[in-house]
Image 1 (cartoon, rainbow, N blue to C red):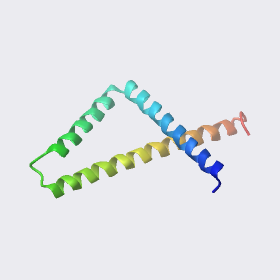
Image 2 (cartoon, rainbow, N blue to C red):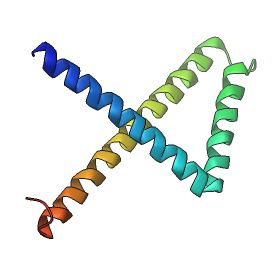
Image 3 (cartoon, rainbow, N blue to C red):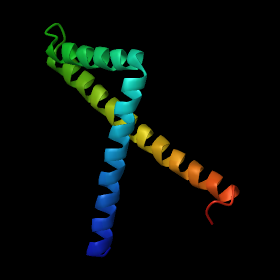
Length: 99
């Protein structure tokens, strides 16, 4: 892969990240209950990490679970965002707005 291609991919990835962040912030502003739930999840995650009742192995397993869950959620959100863009392009093509 050429240096220019790598740079373009990096810029696209950064742009996608920024757009998903904007969409996430807008979603949180538009849906207060979802915002409350996200804060509750963050609090529970912190509580689990600080929980002394769990042994170290269990705590590490839970941290790994939470990390992978968060990563999977991000990838799902990214997929939905890209699919939404594809759907918009398909509709615009069907309407003859773009070729």
